[in-house]
Image 1 (cartoon, rainbow, N blue to C red):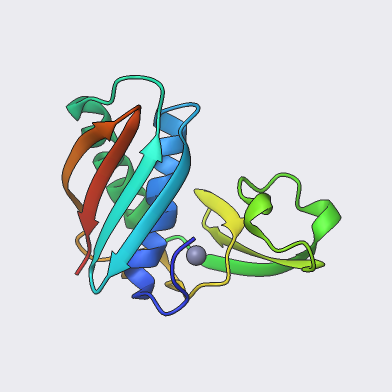
Image 2: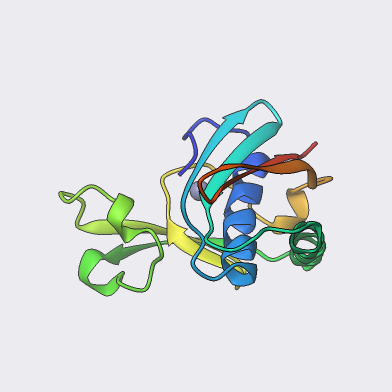
Length: 145
Ligand SMILES: [Zn+2]
């Protein structure tokens, strides 16, 4: 997920968005994102109806997570012990030691990207718009400073 050279606060916010959407919208999957400068376009599949209240919850939840100033931790975990990760399928088969990035207690997933050291470094996370793009797919736009 995310480009290795992406703006670390933006990419870290992408982790939090993925976690928050997964918590709010069970079954959310097939997410994909494009990051450019301080903006991200994030798409995902969801069988239900997304509503403004869901996006408001996600915005509020991520603001609360950021405010905890939780530290990022990075560990290398043997693949056979990494079953709990939501995205182990994205890790190439030949990788035996999986790089696991944890943003506090909020998100843990395999990732090779650059992250903030602490969620407090994510400034002014805001969802700027969202819409359905057809066939149970949704698009959320967000920015950070
Ligand atoms: Zn990452």
